[in-house]
Image 1: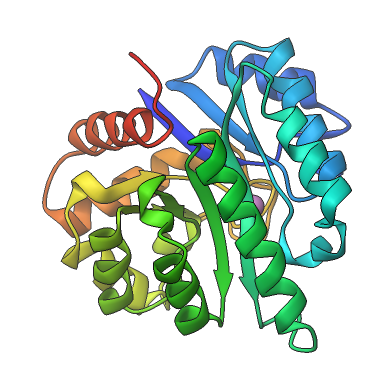
Image 2 (image 1 turned 135 degrees about the vertical axis):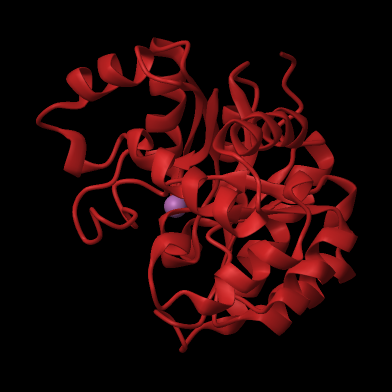
Length: 256
Ligand code: NI
């Protein structure tokens, strides 16, 4: 069984055949998916998907792209959304200095406010962090985010940062990138950290694994990610699926 801990099936890229893909997923080895919000609108979309299909759960949160939404009204809207039964996390939230270099203070404030909301509601967080390793780790530590834990999604930093995040109480999200030939650092990270701290994710429609690189991704392709992790860990695909599934249940506080 496969647990996709991070997907965006409400994305336009699925408008033409969403129903068909979801039908294929229901018949596949993919048993649970968390659809992740990136702003107030896509957070609500995620709840709608989770209310419609048993396969889905929802995460609600505002990504650094839309950090202007995180004012008092934005936080209230998120808090209200979390009353929905199928909301399992706050995310994706974090810092992105790759796409946005000009507003670090606004990004930090939005990140911190959403961490505080997660702590208030005892929900794990899904952290998006790009070219912002030090600030991300400092904020997580200063705001005791390890109390709620969660995942550093689409992990792109050094093995040392992964070890630091795990010590703090976080899982490491691994997806299609691990299959890329040039993903040396991520392969090294996977080798170095325990399988018990890895969760699978697609971030679909983005980041399809080899041999579908640059095409539209879906949870069906997680088989390729599983195979690569199995290779790196010197184990078999079934073990990778079983352990990462258990990790994801624990991370999102779901029962079997
Ligand atoms: Ni995402």
